[in-house]
Length: 102
Image 1 (cartoon, helix red, strand yellow):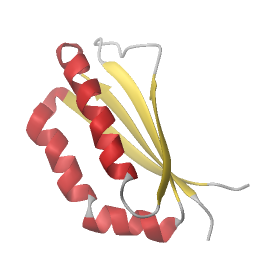
Image 2 (image 1 turned 180 degrees about the vertical axis):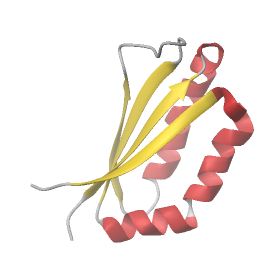
Image 3 (image 1 turned 135 degrees about the vertical axis):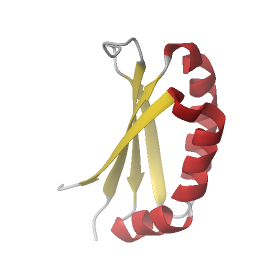
Image 4 (image 1 turned 60 degrees about the vertical axis):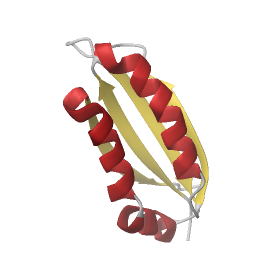
């Protein structure tokens, strides 16, 4: 099995951007502590959305697809709920899974 990238693209309302970024660093650290996660990066898109929302992209590198499936089944619901509880509809998230080819 080969490593995978779990990508989370975020858009954050401007008035929540600072608080969201402060929370996001701890959130990513919590995810990195889970089995199978090897590395993570947080990047900011240089352009805001048309409505001024901050755009961020998180890449998580995982050991393999099994580790990702375990995360999605056992941890993701709780971790996603934390963000929703804190920020409600003040952010939007899109996710995708990428297989590393080499």
